[in-house]
Amino acid sequence: MISISPTTRVRRSPYFDATVAAGVTSMMTYNRMLMPSGYGDPEAEYRRLTTGVSMWDVACERQIQLRGRDARHLAQILATRDVSKCVDGQGRYVALCNHRGVIINDPVLMKIDDDCYWLSIADSDVGLWASAVAAERGLAVEISEPDVSPLAVQGPKAEDVVASLLGDWVRGLRYFGFADADLQGVPLKVARSGWSKQGGFELYLLDGTRGVELWNLVAEAGAPWDIGPGCPNLSERIENGLLSWGGDTDADTNPYEVRLGRFVDLDVPDDVIGITALRRIAAHGPTRHQLGIVIDGDEPRPAHARWYTVRRGGEPVGHMTNGTWSYKLQRNIGFGLLSVACSVGDRIHIDMDDARTAGIVTDIPFERN
Image (cartoon, rainbow, N blue to C red):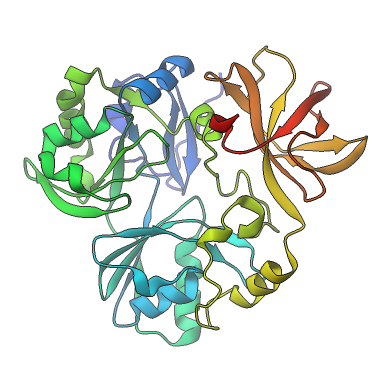
């Protein structure tokens, strides 16, 4: 057995002790924080998410706060989507790009008020990027990582659980909408969001000393609906076409290659980082696109630990960026970042660890197939 050496480089979440008590069996690092990645029964966790309700420690989904009179200006410089349309209490999925138009993060931008925005980030140092940009542009904005730790409640029964906790008003929240709440003295922002397609909420805990308390309150309220612990689910997210920044993207991936072109507003100001490159890419078209892959055979294969080369007619045409067993389709599936010469229906081979394996290119999401 391999043990993880204690280090202050990797932080424990406010829910850490609660997840241990709940039987967590594996963890990964994300934004320099431990995140549960399994509780010992992947299929049961999938079924709980897709047919019932699941609760996740996603405190690693950190918030980068932009505060000050230039907060909106900085948010727009960073985001390739029109920030002027954001209203208080509403989030928007955005792409942050570098000067080449390469995606460096895909957060939810949350407008707290006119002088404060949060970037609810994927796994990268967006705070360093934002701080450098703000300093170089001479903007009056303070960049920080506030004491905010999301706890997700996901699944078709999630709304009933959260309504029982906080009241039926939560049923009226729009997607990515959020509002302040108080749960028996525990301060929260409640958002209709979460990294699944099953519906649900994220409870943004505003006091990290009360994580176990919040976890237990949610578990108790969810007991009538048989709530249980889980985590972002690989099978569910691939079946439904959810992108994993850093897992499905590389150092050259632009939004148009991974189905995010609809989130790019080409008429944003010229000082938006990456917009000049993105206008050029949009005009000429990307050289790669993201499609689905279904592998031949009906025996489950291990999840990917690296990208695999994909070949068509023996020639390399891209990579399979992830793969897993689909409990719904009873097949091994994944995403391919492939040459635009590839299309749905193409027969391909994947250079996997053990052998060259055959498959077929499909559309995304797999739910449609």
